[in-house]
Length: 362
Image (cartoon, rainbow, N blue to C red; front, side, top):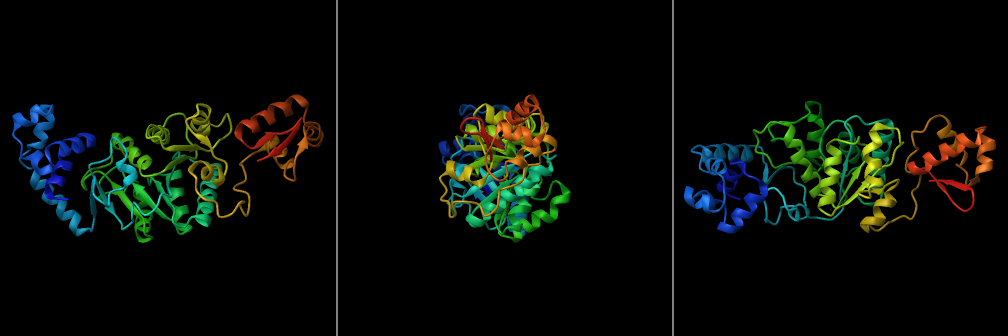
């Protein structure tokens, strides 16, 4: 890494263009020393060339270098040994990452991104906490990646820390800022516990709307798989899932009730075969090929946040399979109501029909 590389980042050209151009001409120094006409011959627009030839470019780069040295930030250049190899495989990988923390990005392949809505529910919180706890029981080397946002992201980071797992927060801004402000102490704990804060933005960049979508590709790219806990049809988590799918990474989604807005995105991912349904850690292990140290969980993964007649049917199956007739009799429901409810529970992944009209709970 050189001052020229930092200057190229500050010039703010597209990451894949920066990677391509430096490979083509031999490096950042060579690119930045080229004449206007030669840069134009490479197909660059006048706007991009103006940024590359800005008079104060190196002055700003020096200021950034001062910040890096003062706060012990690690600048990781694309192609360097320390740069995350999983991210390097992605077509739009950042030219440089700014890292606060000492984590080794290439120590193992047990990196998993856990994302979801900012407006998470008790159901989502319960799943996230228990899922990460179960990961820690089997794989202490695992790393949980998320985006430091409110909701699921915060729960994922805190759960990792409470279970002595390293966790990485990918930021949509420079390292002079922590957003949201309420997560400053969480960010400090992430670093203290061996994790890291990661961003592709120079220190002075403030959080802007487009940067959060840009950030999501790093969340997806760092990990072998992405788990979406809760998400409406639209939102950052769906963006992350779609990006992970475009990278040919495994995507998992937690099913929810069909009329629950916070599960609409997850259910849609499963319906369209963009995500595998995850009800337990075993579902992830089977797809990713992680070796199970224990064949069964010590306790059930989580209790679904069911209510009313849904919960009655689920609870009646606690001690083993029962027939439809038994469930109708013991629940006091009519056959029509029972049929509708058990169908819903099957779609949600909580109940499964086995031989005949027998049912088991999952």
